[in-house]
Image (cartoon, rainbow over all chains, first blue to last red; front, side):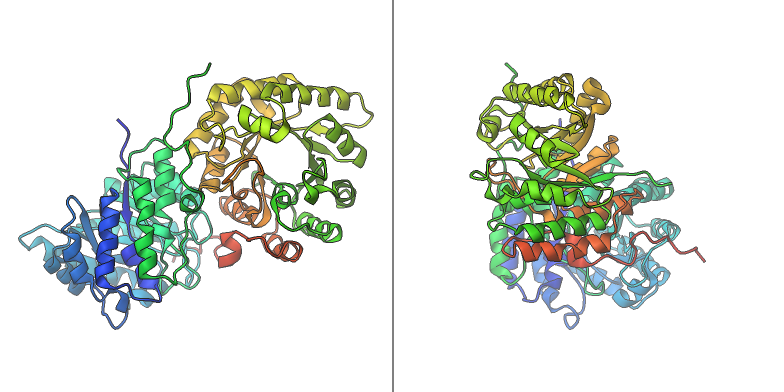
Length: 310
Length: 310
């Protein structure tokens, strides 16, 4: 039995929100279906934010409803506030992510609230969701935990403080997010240990960007600290509109290659995953497509065993 | 005191040998000088191979002599055989790398000898060099140790066997080379442990390629296993003429960023290192330049300390 690692595809949200073109709803739906059918078990399909601010996400309600048709898929949406969470609930999302920037500067740019004000918003979401008939998971991420393009170095104590406040607000899970990709593997190990010491298994996931090329090394550090859930984006699409210089998320294809090569079970068919790039390219043809494995091709050694030595 | 990690720049050899253009000698010399002056302590400046086979390396003698003018620089050259080693010695190189492919198929393509025949050639080099007046380090690499585009999966026992035979031949150091970039971090850890168990500190270095995007993750795994020396190429230049599909070496700029961010001391000024890309681009303008740090820019958090928490 291989140990399972969950890969959550965030391209339809974190990726497309930064794209210059708007991907048509029907194509987005087909793209998400292709990713789900490649075996990805969880997809952040969009965000419930004002369409005036992020027009790429205007169809999130329709996208959530369509994604719910994929058998076994965990359908996630990003919401900045209670209003967004209510919309996600109404659409039927299984869970919501909520960005909570540890950096005050990024927090104010991103949500117009300070860090602890945004934690209070998360608490309101928890209270409201717990009163509803149906459960919906609330899984905020500590954004800019590893450094910020606006505020620079983020003290570890501030990350711990934020994660603890979120856990105390009653959320289901907390992620640590390297929103701008400034993190390094030593920092990942240290932060995961420190946060887990305070909130235990409520810390579930890392959200990493590849801005400095360290994305997979950072994922490896997290993996070795026991993290078993990672956000990533097909073709490394993505960024953050309020973090200048931030490039894309870690590449799902390369992440899956790494995890499977190391003997973990992602449940994902890499060949089918790579094929899903075509629909993405059709939808946003001007966007650069990253990923080394799709470029080089899956090598014949992938998941093969060594021959018996003569 | 920060712990030191050695970065050996192999772009002038492993990079330029694959370039479509031939970099003029004077420019190559200036480029190597710029890398040395950025603080890189060791550069593989070329290879002593037949100019008919690799015309890009025809000026290696002149390049070695010019590189020797850089104060404190360890000047390395790659040699496939005794004749090459004699030429490297005559030019004044401080040390030579010798490729010894663990894969029989790759070994025959690359050197027209099987693995153990090439080990015998290394033994001849050791015997000849030890008879000379001046020392010259002999540091072969176990090529294709992590998998081969021709032979596929390489059994770990064959890597150990090759490394042990090289150590017994009396070499100064042995490197493990992921020539085609098929390796993964779990494999790196396992192989470093297994080889070190047999040859101890003779195992010094990893030579990694980023074919599948796992280059820095693999470097991290090696680092955590105690490896303190890495080959890399500025702008990720490089590949292997006999390994179809192999893309470039790990990117020196990103490697240095990772190591320094983690608190290691490479002795390298990242800003000056990035500036050396200009000369490379001038020399081989058609070659793609990789590297995330040069693209994103060095972030303000680089080697900065966290502010005192209010």
